[in-house]
Amino acid sequence: MDSRSPSIASIGIIGRHNNPLHISLFPATGTGYEADRDKLEYSFMLNSCLDIFEARMPSKGLTQDFGLLQALDERIAMYGWLTNTGVKFVVVVDMEGAPAEGMKVTAGLGLRNSDLTPVFQALQTAYIRLLRNPFYVPDDHDPKLSKGTGSLQITSPRFIKEVERIGKTWYPGIGPI
Image (cartoon, rainbow, N blue to C red; front, side, top):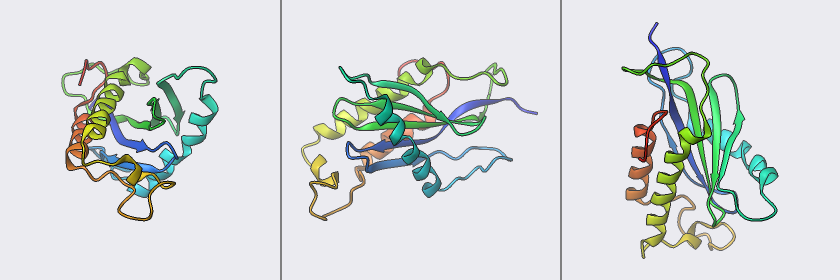
């Protein structure tokens, strides 16, 4: 039996009006557990976190790191981060997702919130770079402000590529991404 290490299964970017802006999937490599969950299933998972964000919303100030939002089972856990513009980042972690090549992994060992901080900081940096693009108009992706023109999803190839890089690069204990 090969040892396995936690890996990112999905990254979701959710708008301030709880509309999905982007979902990236990172299928598990290996056999057994459903290696290729579909985008709809992850959309439901991400949607299930919205009430948790609302319940934990601080009355004063803004806390960015929401930590563990929920664990669906012994394998799948969801972590959240809130930007000061109200955009939410949700990272779904598969606790047995990737072969641990050269890493010492203890079965049943969970993640610390600080293990995902580099992911959230890198996602926030990527999102800020997207907002700084003069051709990106955030209101086009807002269901309350858009007039039915275009997609409500983020379609920037540069942003999508950066999210993919972050999801594939992360492992527990990594420094800045």
